[in-house]
Image (cartoon, rainbow, N blue to C red; front, side, top):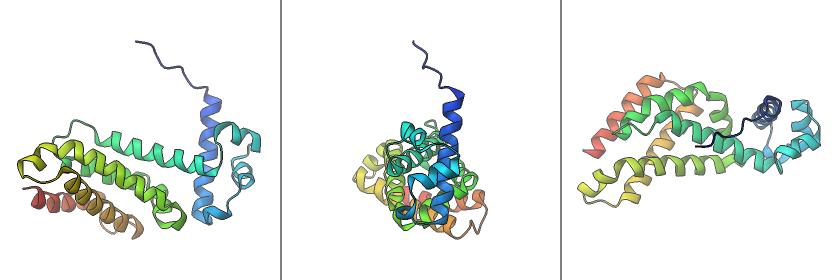
Length: 183
């Protein structure tokens, strides 16, 4: 098996600076009012450098969203037999990355984030509840969308209200609600 090529640390640092600057700007002002110059200035890079990494601010937004959703799903792991087992690490991930999720969910122009989060959760849920849905003679897509919508709506409330209950308790209570449904 061939090893993937290592990415130069300077490239990683530059991308990290650009991403952090962009997310800070998104939390301060509307996406439509953020310019490439704003991002480059905040990241202390040249505009040309920014364009070497991202086609535009929307490509940067897409990359930020994809990266967080991929990492969130990876944190949950494929080994959990029951989707409820995923809730503790998922809420912990939300808590650890609160600033990102709060920014994405509270900014009207980043509604694409909510849609992508919902798609990612629904896909993961489908993979884990296929047998359960079949056993209960229910449509897999419908059940996955229902559970994903309930979860995303609850997580959105929890994040936008500044995590009013601890992550572990939120995961436990949401898990209990889901258990009642999937019995």
